[in-house]
Length: 352
Ligand code: NAD
Image 1 (cartoon, rainbow, N blue to C red):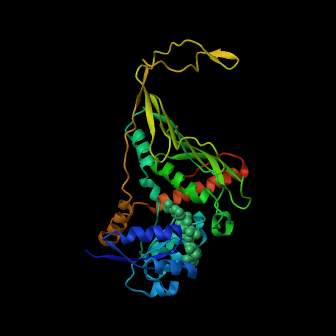
Image 2 (cartoon, rainbow, N blue to C red; image 1 turned 90 degrees about the horizontal axis):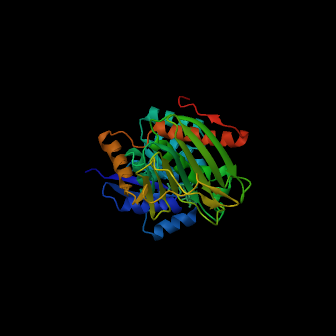
Image 3 (cartoon, rainbow, N blue to C red; image 1 turned 135 degrees about the vertical axis):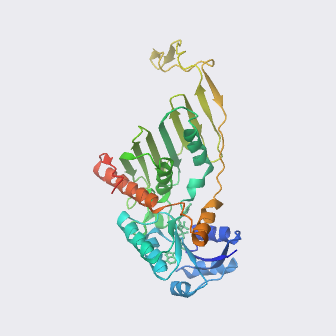
């Protein structure tokens, strides 16, 4: 088995995470790291990792086939392009670029050089996402007409480069890119028709510190995405509504349930008191018409991401996170900003 030597560029939170993972995999060997911050290089050496003296030194090391770019968002594009021009294959951290036109330039270089170029959309392997996707794929609730996907924090936007526009800060480009990529991957062949979004600036003026977004897909599915950072009471991570049932995943611990209707037509109810009035419409279902079921948990195997990278490089396999998907996600991010800016619904052009 050929072992692929890798350099991680950027030894911050995510760069050191990649280093740990690469060091645990047989198919890959961590050749070293490069970071513009000498303190980060010192950290790497203390962690027993070889450090390069410059990016040029990394590029000149012919034993290295793969670079993982785990820097601030604004330099993903130039580093990926430079790396490919020097014969290296690259994985970029997300977001792969700051704009669709930047991504197209980078893809053009990948085509020209024949190098691997992809992005680390690791949250396609998250258990909560796969559990929700499975409910829809297996039709466990009947036809699904609404999905709500939320992450909510209470500490505002982080105090680092994520507050700065110049470095590609903001929550749309941070958590948003994960949740939007999940929405699109879950609907890979279901055309996205429109986008309506609102971005928030509760804790930071320069960059958005969250957003609310409604996606409408061709089959009628309405998919709501929310990333917010000033919530002291949180709502469930996932909420999904189908014609014959509802499901909830409360948190990363996968607590939750499905509630299924087994006697839909038995809708007689006794009016219940509601505020200053009464209601039959909103009265809860009786136990003889609904029942709860545990979630069918699906465990993600994130290692498949790097396995695929190996197979692309060694056996010519197709990359799992494709250029079409990367373009679709960045187009959606641009539509989110355009909708927020104009206060209007944006028609999504799948062919652009
Ligand atoms: P960080 O600030 O902890 O680390 C970034 C590092 O990049 C810093 O050490 C900085 O000095 C270095 N750097 C900046 N420009 C550089 C350059 N030109 N050359 C070399 N090094 C450079 O940030 P982080 O939280 O590790 O985020 C890094 C990237 O990882 C971001 O793109 C972020 O969106 C992504 N990320 C992904 C996930 C995920 O789950 N996929 C999670 C967190 C962060």
